[in-house]
Structures are given as C-alpha cells and as structure tokens.
Image (cartoon, rainbow, N blue to C red; front, side):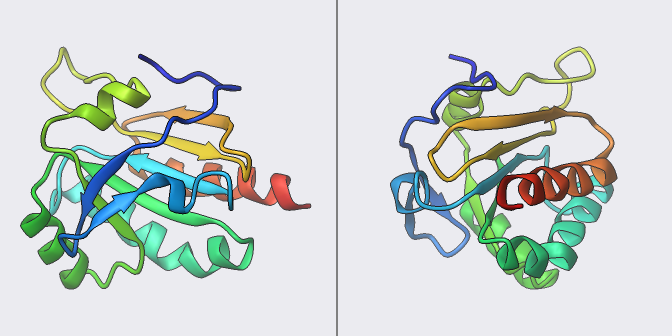
Length: 152
C-alpha cells in the first residue's frame, strides 16, 4: 500500500520511545498530525531534523497539531535519542518496517538508505501533504506552513 494525497490514514499501532503501545486512533481524526519518517537515530541529518522539529514543536502545538517521528530503530535507541536531544514528541519504532510499507515510504540511494518523508494529515485523518526529500532541513518549514494553512 502507498498513501497518496486525499487518502485517509488507516489505524496503526507501534511501540513508542517509552515502550508503550501507541494507537494512531488516539490522534487520527482528532487533530492535525505531522508524521515524519527518517533513516536512523543519532545520524547527522536525522539529528538535525529531530532537533528542528523539537525547536518548532510549540509552534505545531499552538496550531493544535501533533508531531510523530518514525524510524526502524529500536525502542531503546529511540528512548536514548529522545532523552539526549530532549525531544518532546513521540518517536515510534518500526523495526519490521510495517509502517513504512503502510505509508509507502521508499528507500533512497539505490535502496541503501531508508527514505525521509513527511506526511501532514488533517484533523479528519486525510493526507494533505507528502514531502519526500533527503534534505532534512526542508521538512519542518514545509510541514509548519501546511499546518498553518489548515487552521487559518
């Protein structure tokens, strides 16, 4: 399956950085959502991206949106990564790559790197933006501008 703009995101579950089961229905259809897939914890680009989402997190929250980061790293790795960089948002572990397949996130660089894709989902659970770029710094302003358009 591969989500496209206009699709409704199906419910999913995954373990978060605290080892708790996260159920998407707790946020899907209730508030705007930014779901970003990234290659790996503690790599330069991924750390830059996570810290940029951290630095703008209050702006997303003020607009009523939630941010969720997803990679195939373990719960333990996510826990350390979130603590080290004081990340206030949810990180989900996708070790079996089910969420990548559900959303349709493809690998980059001839399949060597997991893709970096950001999805913005409106309060009805509908995908309104898919931003696919290995340039980590471009995801945050794009997602924030899209969320602002939703609420203004």
